[in-house]
Length: 124
Image (cartoon, rainbow, N blue to C red; front, top):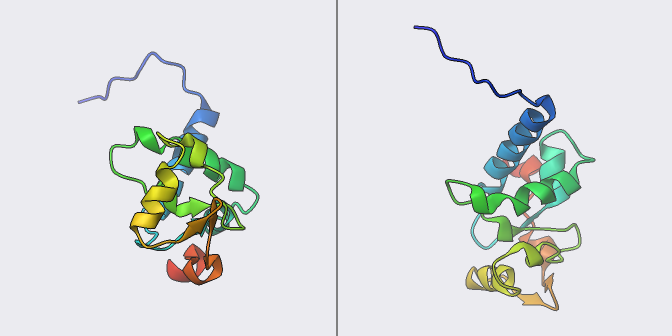
């Protein structure tokens, strides 16, 4: 039986972006409860170290995922909650982290280096 092809024109850039986003989601799902990682660390793990911003864009799209992506565990390289404005409420990202025992003060994770989860070391 032949597979019916869609009439839609395929956008190769959209396919690349979607594939990258799915890889980002899979890495983010591996971040343990009570730990955090950074956009740049995920980008580096995926072999695209200059794509931290693209990882951020992926995190902004997690609301449309069928299975949960803990986007609240992904922050900037300094431990700042730079993506917090993409959550349902202004404090949701911080509240989710605090529920996991992560201390946050002034939108910055306390003991960031201690809580940092590096996929390049953990997902070998």
